Image (cartoon, rainbow, N blue to C red; front, side, top):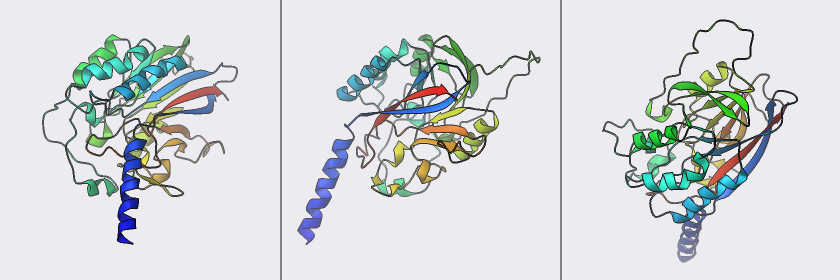
Length: 303
């Protein structure tokens, strides 16, 4: 009996390690554009947690450019090692040639450290870090900006994708309490739609305070990562934790905020919310179960 349990546990652990390499592309559609607008493809990548030796992940990220998205949104935690800057930029190189936007996560600032794995099972395993950043997040951000991607670190911007103007608002990582929601600039009433065809909110971690701010700001769609989809999930149950204060049923995938969606047409006026399960893990917890690493191609269609 005991031997059987040990063998089952070992097999489960081996599979959970294997699953970290089963990279998956999700495809979802949401009717969010004004009537008559052609489709707009947005690639959402998040939580690469890349280390220099992860060549298979690098090759997979590079291959995503073949999807020909109109816009790429990166919701942070790209780095996992102080020597990861070059490999991350190599992985993202084909995507950086496209219109894009980004925010940073905690692991773009701070190198992962070994932790008690039981802490992960806490509802919000947040730690306020009191040390100087030791990862090259500044250099990563500069390279993304130099490529033309919009830096949404506590700021607003606009991007032109497929010839169409989208307004953007983003925050720095709420998991580290670095978020400062940017106010809308005062401007004269021109009678024009200042948000273009779409207003997009971007955050690394989907904390409810930030989602509420973005919804109140009029975001049509909100993109976030951080949760790893729960990372360790149970079939029929789903995520056990989210590592923030969002509810477990919205640990990954497409939902509405604050209402249900999709597509009971979502709590009358809800924003669409997409939470990516991400493509990586901490190097000190290289396991996933029933939650494959992913990127998502979101196709925005006309309402």
